Image (cartoon, rainbow, N blue to C red):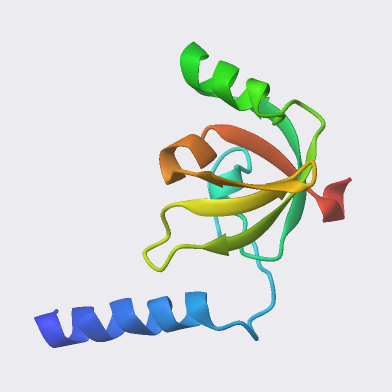
Length: 109
């Protein structure tokens, strides 16, 4: 594939991600659903963590505990960080942190 086709594919997916009229969808994935898989506007509940102890303790201290409901507010232009609304405040997380937070969506609640 030539570089122009690669760039066109990248920018078309980038525009889809930024389109505010796009309905919230869950990205395709293998394994358990994580916070990183949720699209802006999606709601979910924390079901567990797969992170090093220091990172999970920091998230627990900020109120992101098992059973807590959250909403993905928006993604930064390149997808990192991810802004979520949890317990009435906004929290920004890196993609690697979000990938370690297991979620169940509102549809499965």
